[in-house]
Length: 189
Image 1 (tube, rainbow, N blue to C red):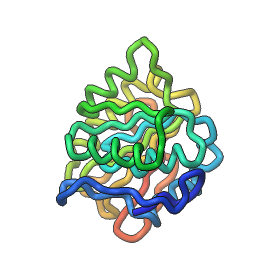
Image 2: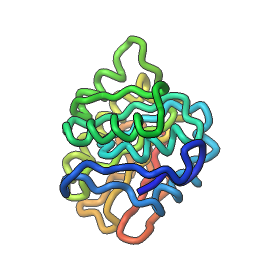
Image 3: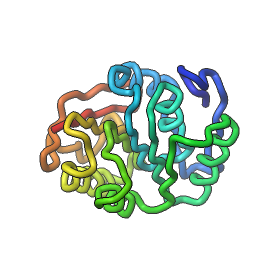
């Protein structure tokens, strides 16, 4: 696994040991960031279920101003910290070592947190409840969690059962892209 483009291009990243983490493939990350490229520069990006942090690191590499890395698994948090240190990234990020639901609540509360330009989520493909719960929460907190033009991107299995809904509160799906066994669904207000 490597950083695809930007400041840290071609630099290697590690993944947490074991099979609990399924990193987003290099090819799918490249496709994702080609689509998001007009929105990345100076963005506030949330990488939910961050795992290795590869998606958030890619956002930083391409010019995001701030990335929230959210994962509550100790091996994932350790991998994120190791990847950031190996790349010499000392600022422009915040690690939220807590559940995604707790992090979303915290990031939507009044305080020093900035609303997100882009939220990316990639729960385990088999965890259909996590998709529904997370997207429902993002929809519930949309006014304080997302900028007005905020984008939510969901990585999922191509044949996800049950399929994702077309809307979650004010969020409406506007695009679906399939690549190999994976899919990306894009939501905005």
